[in-house]
Image 1 (cartoon, helix red, strand yellow):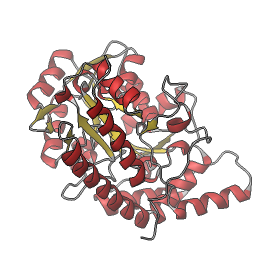
Image 2 (spheres, one colour):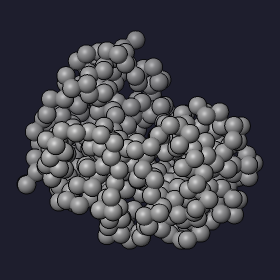
Image 3 (cartoon, one colour):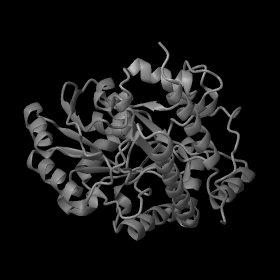
Length: 394
C-alpha cells in the first residue's frame, strides 16, 4: 500500500474536538471517540506538500482563488460525476452548514416551513429552528433494514404545510443511503410541482461503496438545477474540515443573488487561505490517496459486519451504500434512551452519536465513524461487546 491508514496517530493535545473535549462535553476522560465526522488519518501527502509550501512563504493575508482553482473543482465533478459546472455558479463558504443556514435565510421568511427527512444530520434541524422557521419532517421509512423515501408523505407534508424549501441529504447521513436516480427524479418532480426550492447537501458524494453511484441532483435536469443550491466540499473526502472551505453551486442567477446577499449579510467574504490551497491540491492530485482510502474503509466495513455477526448479533448494521458513517440498530436490546446512553458511555466507554440527535426517528440507534485505523475500530467493538455481555446498570 502506498499510503498508510493503519498507524494510530495520537490526536490528543492538538485542540482536537473529537479527542480533547470529553470533559467539556460531559464525558469521561478515558472515553474512545468515534462520533464527529472527521477521520483519524493524515490527509494526502500531496496536499500536505502544498500546505507546507504555503507555510514556508510565511504570509497569510487575504486570499482569493484564481482560474486554476475552479478548473480543479470543475474537472473533479465532470470526471467523476458527469456534471458540468460553470465558474459563474460558484460561491465559496466556510462550510456546508454555513451555506445551508444562509439558504434558509435567503429563501424563506420567519414562520415559513422547511422540510427535511429524519433521521438526518442534526444541524439541518438546528438551522431551521435557530432561524425561526417551521421544521416539517417527512421521515424515511425503514423497510427490511433499508431506508426509503415515503413519497406520498413527502408530497402531503409539502402541500399541507406550504413548504418553501427542502433540505436534501445525498448521500444520506446517517443512514448511508445513496439515492438512486429514479428516487431523486421523483423528489425533483414533486418539488417542481409545488414550487419548492432544494438545498442539496452532497458533501459525502465521494464515498460510495461498490454497486452504488452518486447522482448530482442538479445534474439530472436543467429544471432541477434551476431550483437547487448544491453544497459540496473537500472536507469529508480529504479530512480538511478544519480548513473551512466549501464550494456551493447555484445556476439560477436570481437564486444566486439572493444567496450571496445572505452570505454578505453574515459579514463573510474570503475563505481560509489554507483551505483554498488544500482544496485545489486535493482535486488536482488527491485521487490515488482517495481510492486507497475507500478500499480501506470498505475493509473496515467488512470487519464491522463480520464482528457483529460473530459477537453481537443482537446489534443490527444498517447496510450503508455510502459515507464512512455507519448506523447501528440497538433496539433489540430493549433499552430506554437513558439506559442505552449508560451502556455506550459508562460501560463501553465509547463516545458515539446517539441516534436521538438525528430526530425522534433515530431513537434506539447509534452512529459510528469507521474512518479510523483498524486497531481503533477493533478496540471500540471489543469494548462494546464486553459492555453488552455485562448487561445494563440499574
